Amino acid sequence: MREWPRRLTWEDNMRRFASTLVIVLALGLSLPASPKAAELKMLSGFPLNFVLTEEIAKPFVATLQEESQGRIAIELSGPDAVPTFEQLEPVQAGVFEMLFTHPAYHSGTTGVGLAIDGIASDPSKRREAGVIDYLTKHYEALGVKLIAAPATGTKGFRYFLREPIAGSPGLEGRKVRGTVSYHPMIRALGGSPVNMPGGEIYTSLQKGVVDGAAWSLTGAVDFKWYEVAGYYAEPVFGQVGVMIFMNLDAWNALPAGDRAVVEAAAVELEQSSIARFDELAAAELKALQGFGMKETLFAPEDAKRLETLWEEGVWQVAIEKSGAEAEGLREIARKAGLTR
Image (cartoon, rainbow, N blue to C red; front, side, top):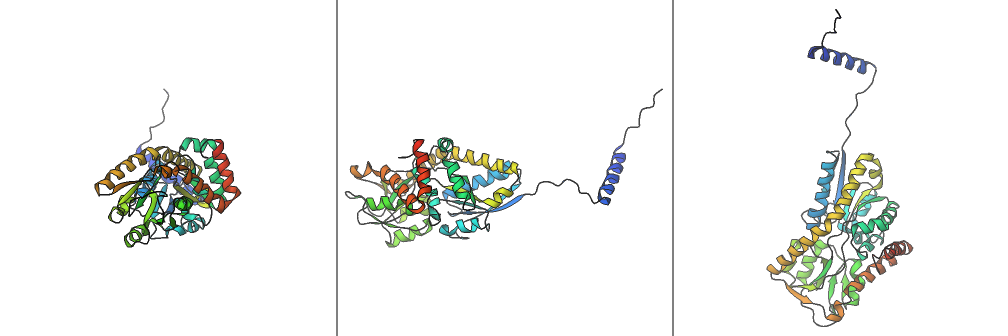
């Protein structure tokens, strides 16, 4: 009769494992290691409790950690760590690996990114037309990788004013806060632009340093501007394109699988942000009305040209600062019907 081999017991298996481990250690070999987590530091150009950080940066961070199964961990810091207008340089240098911001905040370095606000907000068309590829190559030359460019709603901006609009041009004689993207539009409407970060607007409105502020359709409630400005202007105009960047060396150091996780999360963020921020903008307007803010209207002759003033103004700033590189982006967007 054939004799079958004895079935190995748990003790037999453990003895074999121990013997193998001894051989591995004796030969100076190593056992396979689990992938090392990428521990990254991200700057936000907005306070950590501000709506843009809460609704874009924080969910994006959470998605990356979940989809990478913990291999990507991100520590988020705000303007208290590095002032809003000074955040690109430490990310270029690798002191921080990631940045969530509006590209107008680093317009002293390049004006190409801010031109995104002059391009229609459809995320699929932007990618299909090559807009995102163009911006990616531009920023790579500056040492950073463009990760995502989510738009915050179908429409982007409005004016918040201490006093109602009276006649045309609607901002005649007023000092109005706005980053460089707004400056041509503010001047065309009779105002004088004042450049300052969002965190300084409340006090400036309160003290009369400015008579109004141009801002996105979300955020005024967080900043409590209803306490120091009595009016929100209609119609709204333009679109907001915030951006997430990563230090290029840090990006290249990520394993291919983790880069794929980041890219997939970026596309999903761009696809979902518009509808989400349309909902938030509607809720914000209702809240502002509840706090006592009143509507003030641009005169018809001003209202009908707000979109053109905004778009042309954005491209004017971008081209003045970055010349042919901005013009190249405009040509791509024009061919796709995404800008004038």
